[in-house]
Every structure is written in structure tokens, then in C-alpha cells.
Image (cartoon, rainbow, N blue to C red; front, side, top):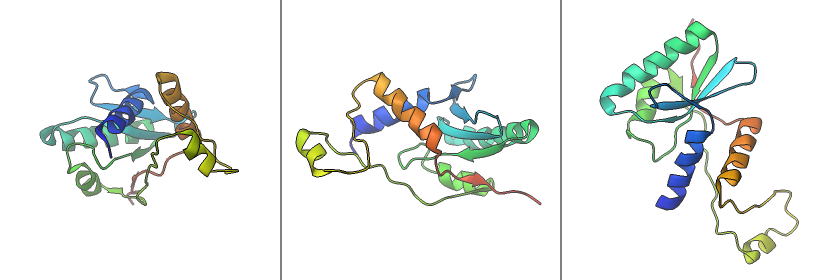
Length: 146
């Protein structure tokens, strides 16, 4: 995937929810505060386990379900393994389809039921974030402990 797209994706993740006070992660809360998704994190390998544990404690104390969204380019690279070690269960891998949107590309989709739009500014990213929140995202979910 090209670096420009990954930068835009990370920018979107940073603005799609509420950043933590220390800026190391961004949370998306459901309207009723029963679910939280970590949609962006930025921690060093040394900080990672403490950050994960702190978010699990926060979720338990506040009584919400915690999910942690990861992407293949996230750092540190061991983030998915550390989440699994902390009790999160991975969901199916998702893919993002990115195509150059030209008149020819749009025509190739013909009468597709999907809306195809060019996103080239912050408003477009905000629209994408709104749609993602409304439709939900498959994310690693913390296993219930008995």
C-alpha cells in the first residue's frame, strides 16, 4: 500500500474519536457508552503492555466492552500478538480497497449498489469516519473472563 494512503488512513484514525490525555491512543465510544473501540495507538514496545492493561482496567471500571482495531502497518509490529496475550481475540482480517478514482473507474462499476466518491479533503475523511462508526467495524474483542 502506498505511503500517502497510509498517512491519510492514520490521519483519519486520529480524528475519528477522542484522543487520550497523553495522546497515545484514540477511543471511539458508542452513543450509549457501552462499547469502546481503540482505533489508533502510538506506543513504544516498552509502553505497550502497560497501555493495554490500563485500557482494560478503564473498560472494566466503566463497564463497557473494549475492542482494539489494528492495521498491518501499526507499530510496534508486535501489537496484535501483545493484544492476544492480554486476552483479545482477533476477528477476521479486513481489507481496504483503494483505487484511483477516474471517470473510467466509476464507469466500470456501472450500476453498482455502492457509492463511489473521491476523498481529497478533511471533509471527505470525516464522512468516511462517520460511515465507519455507523456501520461498525469488525475488531479484536476482549474475551470474557469467567
